[in-house]
View 1: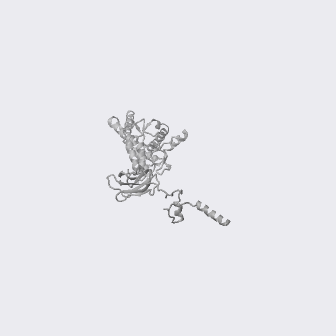
View 2: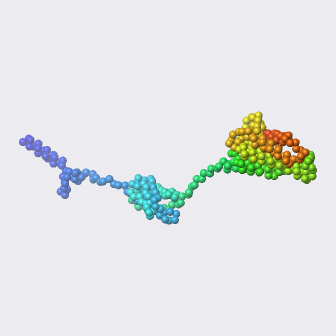
View 3: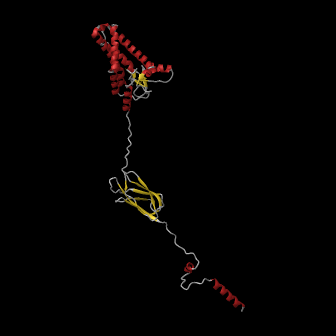
Length: 350
């Protein structure tokens, strides 16, 4: 009897713990029963965040649709971050999350365009037509000057150099590594020096002094005598300039200019200045014997015998004497160039 009592008690306990289902609930499976049990929380699938759409059309400055423009969307987590416009210039972003973002449009030949957009949940935003502007074309031009052009510019700068603002000082270069002059430039510089009004005036002044002292008496006095003296003085300068600074430098490829040193001890600068009458810079940039100056002075002195009075000609002796005088005068001139002329000249680089 005891075992039967225990079984009856257990059955009543199990019946007490089992929930009583309403008569309209039908269990189709254990899982269904669990969902339908009273007091059990109701389960829902995960909700997707609200998504919107952004679309628009890209046009050129004339209002025509732009095909192949790249449209970029930044600042949101979306399924699409970039799109390309079609034949009609249209673009579209779908499934765009709500929030602030930036829309950028780039197309070849046009300036970049961008705008900020605040998209609301589930909003379908159609942007106003995007009208691009033509890009500013930038062309990089690299100008490369030839050595001849650089030499021309440097020579023109030298032609502005004048002692005391008047006396031409064209044959001095204050740029140590100046470009060599071409043959044409050497002749032009010689001609420019010879026809300068101050050069002509200097010859006129020398002729006046010789007239007053009756130098080269074979020329006589009066207007004709002065004209002969002036012609001889001017020819000395013209012939000497062309032979020593144009003809021979072109043939021997030597630079007729004096290259200002400006640094070092007084002694080194003085020796350099004096030596320049017999040593010069070649067109190749190397120092070499100054044949142009030495031979030019000698030839100019020889030619002067053609127009000086017969009474003043002493043959080879006068030629050599005049040549040495010309060379010595050149040495004195370069000393002045090295130590004084730059300080009293106008148009020289500082």
